[in-house]
Image (cartoon, rainbow, N blue to C red; front, side, top):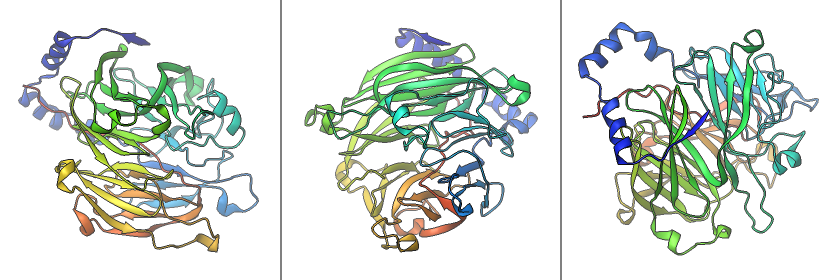
Length: 429
């Protein structure tokens, strides 16, 4: 249930007071209930794939398990085509998939459409894509519903083509409510495609509240600098603030024609929120997990972006990795825009899988794995991921390995996105 509220400074102060926890309580909690910290592995299984309708088994998809070091990739046939869009939600142990989506429907662990899980993201773009996979680089994020056992919230953003521009913006923010006790444990969608925000938007991000009792959700709007913040708790989803946080370039390009948002998200520690505009660069903001407040917007201009560009944080939250099709760039968030914060750490080596020229295997969508490495799909079908081995280190020390992780079957640009489920609580004083 969505609950809107016109929250003011007093509400934010109340949140800050509620989130303040004695240090001793947090200390005892971590020792008396260690299973809580060990049971947040919802992102330990990734699905990838291409076209399961083809007669060639190498195109029938696979999965990656992060329970081993290095991760284990194995073939996994699914009667579900996945390409680019590959959302997966595993159980808390990270050993069994609860549900997944290719952007058209939500599927249960038996690869059947979940009860009432058909036609998510339904709009014009859905009709254009169907029955082929839903083409979108933004696969949504899932979280356990705070305070509700076996219930989950899946946040997703439909794509809506605009024929007056060359861009395809996101048509707002939607959420779907799932009860995994339904349908004899296979899961049931209680409600779907619920509009949280109705209008063109930037991608969203999720991070835990300071005391880990709930979640914060943030997204921007299309072609301006307005940001919406929501609190998610056991009672529902509450709009807490709407902020205008301008960055320098918005005054120069004030028409939707000039903006094409691709990726956004929180840093792993929840202290930063970034939005990547494909035409211009990255807007970086500070975030207060105690009060749910954004501040200190700054803009980092980037040239040479492409449709494959993405935004990935290092595990220590210091670096942002940005790619275009031919380069991988590291942004040091400790430096201001005028302090030369960017370093090109890799150039694509011009490899073409199976010599399928001109479809090169350069840097595609990227995501941070639970093992602390960054994995980049290729811009074309391929049996490899590019890997950043040590993303916490600056420059060449980060250790980029092109085609560094081999897959037993072909991937069509799919990576899995997830919030930081293992984020620790903090004290708010």
